[in-house]
Amino acid sequence: MEVRFRDGNGVTKPVERLYVRTEAGTGIFYQRGIRLNVSPTEAYGYSSAKVGPVYTNTVAVSVTGGSAPYTHSWVTTGGFSATAASSSSTSFVGNPSSFAGEIDGVATDYVTDANGLTSSISVDVTIVREN
Image (cartoon, rainbow, N blue to C red):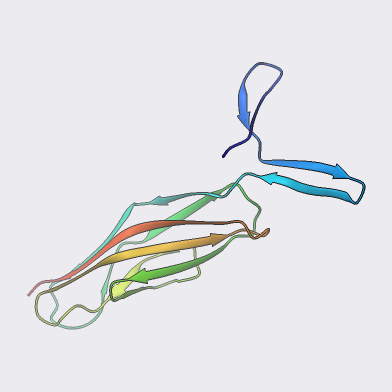
């Protein structure tokens, strides 16, 4: 659901916050959610070395809406990890088999704003070692 209003020029715009004044004071009745964007939308790492970790490109999450500061928590599936698990920008690292191997999975950034609003966004991750 999104609350919108029409301004004096007839342009429809989204409402970020709607406050209601009661006898007990002012409280937030509605707050527009956090919106996330990730760039690039995939992470890929490749190595021809027989041993050692393989790193992907960096992905960055931008946040609009909500209230700063924002916290980030990257959660991964598939046998790899985030290099900066509490940052808006991270790459991923895995250690595929010392022979030809591939790790595929998904990384999800869970973002929370100062008021406890949450949102998440995911990227596909592929890490390849070829010999």
